[in-house]
Length: 189
Image (tube, rainbow, N blue to C red):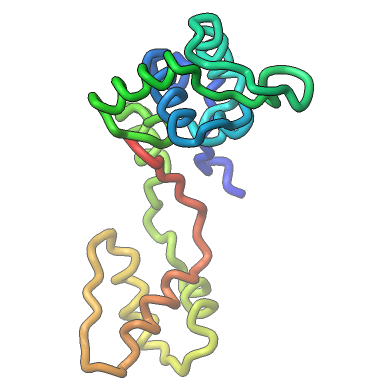
């Protein structure tokens, strides 16, 4: 792995995540409203945050009698099974009237922009060896690689055209199988 490889760090707090406790509260209540019940661990996974990050919001909702612990299946709130109280269901419906988004916590635009910049491919990322490995099952020529390599490395769109059956789909599929680093894309911004 290259030392310049971008790997997003899980946030350790709501501030680091760039989300408000109000947004997390809404997502928790809406998730519980539709699921009926879920564990703290599953709730955190659904929101895309560690439970330690959302735990204070869960405790706030419990103290406000919006969320109830149905049962505990281990030690700590992470393994407790939560459900909405009647008051929590009413609040969840109010939140749904205003905003029907239900999914992981969004990533702030500034974090998204930073991640895109950090993951920008470097010139020459596609080597002739990578291309030859990707097309090892095909009959090719050096001229094929001499044309394809610069096109792929140009950082521009690549238009593949031709008659049906001449290998356009195969070419695109093989390019998808070249060795490249993982690209991290947020679920929602």
